[in-house]
Image 1 (cartoon, helix red, strand yellow):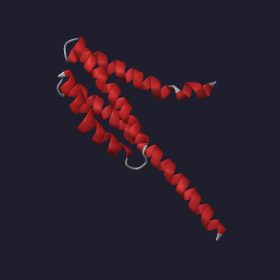
Image 2: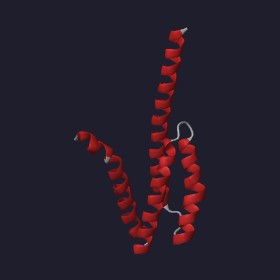
Image 3: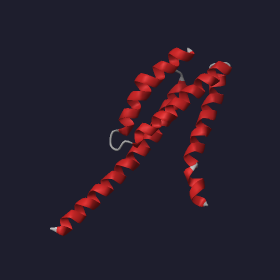
Image 4: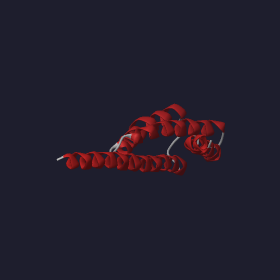
Length: 123
């Protein structure tokens, strides 16, 4: 039963961040359109966070996608501009991505080192 609660914790954090940045967008950009713009931006940033599951280079790929694809697309679509709020959203999701890339990289290194150790025992 506890395993199911742990699986949904990541989704809860993303939902919380989307709501938080959306609510702050209402006040920073002065209305519902700003809130919706921030919701769109943070949902796309959250989806880009999955790229950070790539070991060793995932956070870099995520940074590229967030910087050169998502941000210009949302800024052009919603006519918002860069503020402290978009900066905070960017670095929050990139920080999560860096942590995820580090965890995946350590996992891959552990698997590789384990297999090398097993192989060296055979000789």
